[in-house]
Length: 183
Image (cartoon, rainbow, N blue to C red; front, side, top):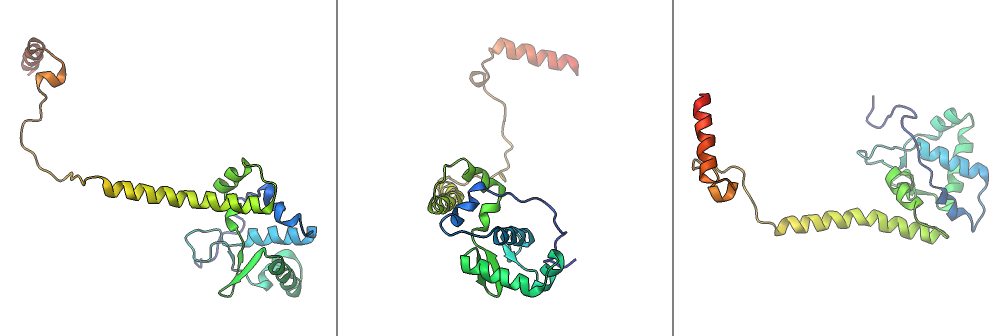
């Protein structure tokens, strides 16, 4: 199987209710919204691919799957580009803010009251930026720690002193004698 090919329709899609916010100030037809969701489903969902979040299928493939003509697919793509939902990059169509369809991000955004498209995108950017900040902070903290090696050979006495065990000398002697008897 080709690297870009995926098993058709494996997995699931999360649709945040707030996804409709960008359409409230300029009406979108139900058909266009349906085509947009269908295109999202057909995108490359494998984060290991450089085409993650992009539509890699041809108009002919989509037309065959959707039971329409290639020109119809092309017309809908152009409308979605005009509305700003699709972005053309390096000859591929990319879903704008594809992260909105990721489970973890959608769960976080669903907890935030969103009133405008600006709220949606501002919160999206802050949530996406947070893991990067956490990683940067963790890396800074690691640089401050002194390096420790586990490749140290030690042949000295590893036993604890009486003060460290909390046992009296009498208790230690009793334990030693019982161990000698077991041998």
